[in-house]
Image (cartoon, rainbow, N blue to C red; front, side, top):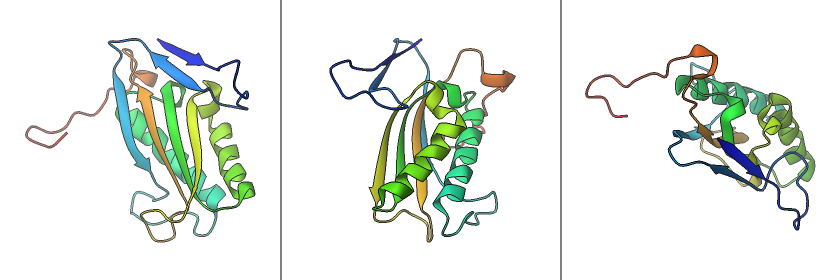
Length: 150
């Protein structure tokens, strides 16, 4: 069970919570940063942080499905944007809001950074999610092959 907390003595966040508390015994997934690359490894949305954010969200959804979760079960995100302009960060955050991630609302940090790992990359999102006992949409999580690194 998720208990989302908005602290009444702090400035009220617009579309996220200050904290998320999960009961003991809940299965969690700690996801690597989702990046704006397609399945062939090509950058999507060169020079366009909004288009890159859309691809990042699509890739994040794929990561979540692979472990039997979905956007609804995301507890926390760190959203990295290569920009020092508040308007650019806000445009990327609008993509996050439109994705359904803010429906929880989950806990999040939005950061303007100098650079990210791939040439031309402008957006990355790292997430932590609950893996529900009943997988999202009946998807069974992938299991690593025998002897493969988890």
